[in-house]
Length: 534
Image 1 (tube, rainbow, N blue to C red):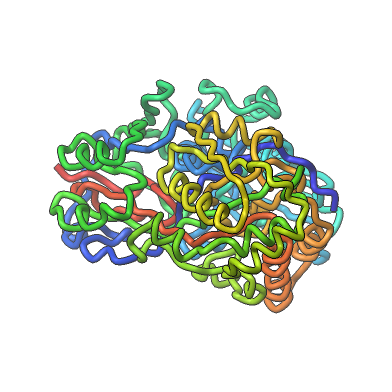
Image 2 (tube, rainbow, N blue to C red):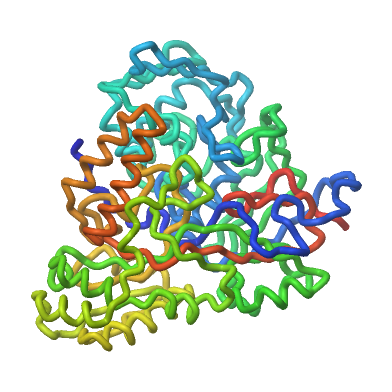
């Protein structure tokens, strides 16, 4: 497979976080923040004020996998298929589907009562146009596109996808919560083409519709009165029945965590993102606040392989052996409930995707070996640059400790901090950096691993026949055993070729008002099926 170059770094980046799996939240549970809520009847109406730490560059959930885009976008848009609470693909806008005996033809029936925010009803032509755009602008869609021969509408509510060869991850790709296959009106899909959707084009089918965006300040969504809900109440995740109890959601940009907490205490905000772990006890002990925690991918260090010194595998191995990850984690996260050492590409909670096989080289700390490898490498002694965004304190701390540890084995190091938008821009040019520090939120298939998309800035210009071959094998594997074997080889490849170095699995701490009821975070913040008490 010739994987296309894809230059949107941010497939998700920013480890910002997601997925259920509470840790130590004795007062609250993300599945239900209030023990008395089951006794209360949901209240309709009200405005929910949500403090988020970064302003998205776009709310086009198909165009980018950035977490901040997704967190806003999945209230507006919906997908043909979506993951349930157990990460299994289920129909969302689709009603049902059939796969031909040769596994090359997918016939998808579309629900007949799904409305767009502009008042029109979803048709097969809208779905075909959305898939066509997804194949061009989504990092997941570009991979799936290699296997798609034709997409056509066979009647007003039926779409047929024909593959050029068997591709077992197709449903998972269409359900991916990153760079998602959002269904938008045909005209908007064609007008937008390969450019991100403009604010006036943010038309989806979700329970909330886009209203306004004051860049750098707030994004406002309003309840979609004509929303077409599914009936299933037990699916959870991103599919099943969704009810918008709230009249309005305001995502407000607040960069200072202390300001967020103070605002939560004074009812200025109802939900705040990314609370530093060292504030956990403060949140836990306050009767007006509930902690919300969930696993969120992992923090990484990515070497730039497009130039010296890290185009040399010995320099990358020296880097890997120089890292005392336990010291980095203690300095960065403090509370050990918010980080975990694990060398796998997926989280242990993802039972179908996780294996620890192939991770032996994950904790490779050995200063003597690092010094030896650096001496044997082509490193010329010139300062290397570590680039990071100072919009996220934990990545700033990792960069600071990383600098100390690399200098101990002989590297000369300079730190290059930038605010998020500038950081993303700088990331695209290999001349600007040698190492980047960033977090990658939870992924749901090998096709979604944006940090390994070949020859892109997001992967640090990784080029590997070995990885490409494994990704191809994954696409045709049918049995669970085959997939586990491939996943172990994928782990091993990353730990040997070092396209990036995983630091630790992260858990994110958010906080909410005790007035927010029946709240279920799952993979990030979702504000349907939840309501505010008076």
